[in-house]
Length: 299
Image 1 (tube, one colour):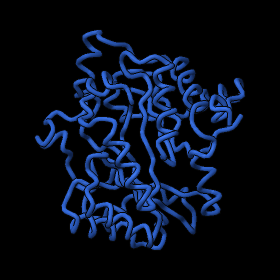
Image 2 (cartoon, rainbow, N blue to C red):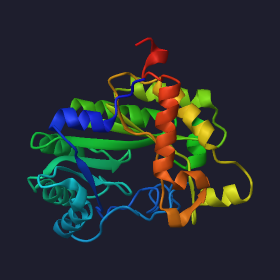
Image 3 (cartoon, rainbow, N blue to C red):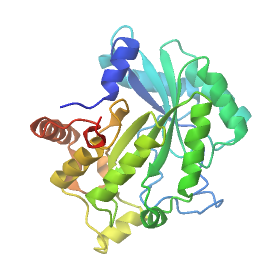
């Protein structure tokens, strides 16, 4: 059994545990402000549930306080701009925000979630500049390579846009992490594995796997309530995850094996609300099936 987990990577890189601090940039999204759409992606509830709010120093202080008990006397953190499109602002504003987030000595890296179509040349130049100070990671929400599913999600960009973004980020020396959702309506296990294989070949350094979960207040919830699709069982999710892991390169860092939303808004699947139990089931299955990351690629 083998997968290249983020915790293993961070321990090798920094010699111990590193904690992510979820921060809010205040940025909007072209899929919400009317540039592309006003509704957002079909699964997005727009809450930014896990991010701190307020000015950056206050956000950092609050986020550090939340993990202080387990972080120990010499903590290390990653400043993580998680919700919405965190490069979707004037570059001078981004510079001020990113610099403030990177300033504390305990911050060892900066992680920025964004869209592939929101990386203009001036932002890429800024990221490359900051990456010379501390490591910068950029997370891209690809979710799927299949056009019909992407259209249903209202993703708002075509696959070549993603490919260009990865190429430009890698040319700037930036670490690229890509999000994939498993269990999207109409997608088979083989289709999910195809997406994982494509991500692995695209030049990305890391991947985050998410379970499609239905949150209250989303357009996805309307379709689910109307019976237009069913969410995955735990067994089906783990089987799909194993197929995806076998189709990515051994050296790719697996940042997440599953994702969860705010429990108060979770409609389905109910089993995903117990994250510890889910992770235990995933780890047990990976061990039982002796899953080897990259094995389907002959690596």
